[in-house]
Image 1 (cartoon, rainbow, N blue to C red):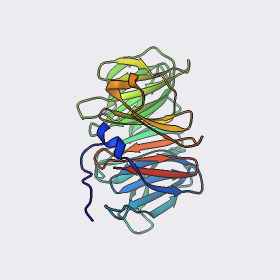
Image 2 (cartoon, one colour; image 1 turned 90 degrees about the vertical axis):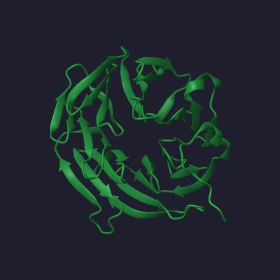
Image 3 (cartoon, one colour; image 1 turned 30 degrees about the horizontal axis):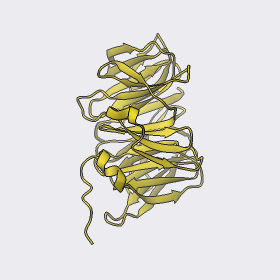
Length: 304
């Protein structure tokens, strides 16, 4: 049997070939999910971290290889470039997980304070990870570095991959780009904001996109490169992911849809219904032509 060459990014012409590789039940709702090549991190209910590994390339079998109860509410997870996992959890805990370690110390608690951690982002390598954690007291921390925000409360924070730049969205609609505790850009979209989802850029040179939830129930797709915004004709439920020209959205009617950024008005290129289940977390992998979707009682892995 020959293997399909899955190298290169997922593109629109791949979508007709998308097939369900695995549907794995879990004991509690999936709250976070993140792909890293042959590894998949899943957070369930909301303090259990599980690591699954793809055992075969041609006939993929995903097997649970690690599990840990962190005894705290996991708010954010992300993989570094060399498959080390970073986590931020309430109340103020930061963790590093290395799935290659085969003993009970594979998850290491590296920092903690009494601040209420709302979210976090990560980039860099395991030898020098860059972790931003932000709390409900208008403070954003890069390890021991903090930044006070006087003109709004953070509702979202993430990292631009490979640039160690934090993207922060305030409830006032302001967007900050911060490097090493210094604000390098301040964009005000003048729309009260209740949340935002950062979409991974298609290249290191592109600052990326944001899906911003506004109090008026409008959804805006915001370009940090052109400082422009377009209103989306649908409501994104909890999650979104991007890969080049492709945008994947979890929609309120219990479905997952992929759109082309350059042809948003043409409707979805692909829609996967889930019979009313909420899709709570989505993760595209940039080169393996895989994406994972977390549901209320299971998660699905799709591939080309």
